[in-house]
Length: 195
Image (cartoon, rainbow, N blue to C red; front, side, top):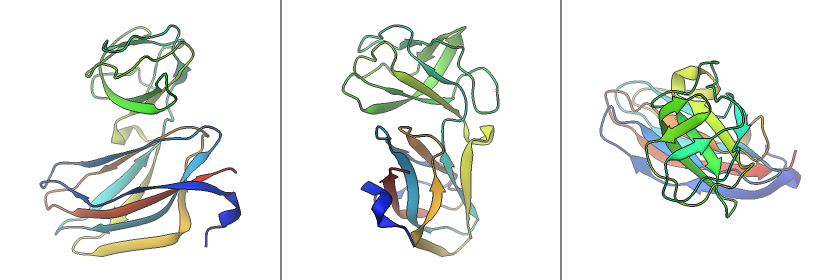
């Protein structure tokens, strides 16, 4: 049972499915001075076992060394960015950074030149100097909570703390492998907690 005295809001994700062997991804944005906690999920797997990976930024926890303009693709970091496995950030790695308005945005690394990340998509808004930049890497890089979703089964769990982000403020990135037989995400429920 979740102790509601520590909860400071909720975020939900509703129904989402993809073609077989196309990952189901969701972005769960962080909130200042709060940690994200998974308190419920519902999923129907196809004829193969699926894995729900709840990724957190266990790699370099760096920040922008200078402001980055809207509609550009480069972020210059204070520290050389590394993924959760300790490798330098590389093509395909998932990253998140905080925009000028205080919201988070996810992107994918296209390339890295020492401390400069070039993203695959342009920034949607200014990323101010000293804004946090988080490196998630890819699912295999290890900073994650993993839930096995049994084949041909509806898995529904609500009402407990299934996973808590070890870091305040930070987002989660959800990736479900969706295997060779398509599944259906029926819902995710997260709470912002002040513990």
